[in-house]
Image 1: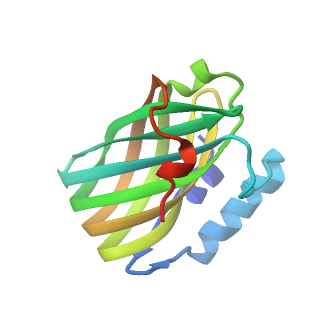
Image 2 (image 1 turned 120 degrees about the horizontal axis):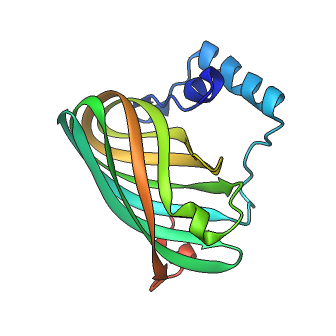
Length: 173
């Protein structure tokens, strides 16, 4: 992973506000300029929504489920993984765009991110994850709980099968 990618994935959540340090914003824009990646749009065809729970006391665990909307078809997904160091407990609704996904089998993999979070009550933030196939998830996060984290995280996404509920019905409110 490049330094710009790691900097762009930093997420700091403070009650009600997403704070992105100027150096991180500059690194994120540099990554866009050097890689030719286009920022995600709300109308992106391939999208994802999932709900996760994170529990940490040093090392921690993340688990949840959601829906991947890929090429007009909805798929149930499972999310599991962890990171360290962090302390606390939070629930989050996460949604965003999926870029660079060629086929559904390529989604079934581990995605990496660097995550910094300071949440007490509720907050919002953004996060970018990438797998080894260069599929990127550009995500908005709405969290509730009390958690302090500066973690390297890996999240394993598994495609379970056809979705039982539609992508639209699962969106974060």
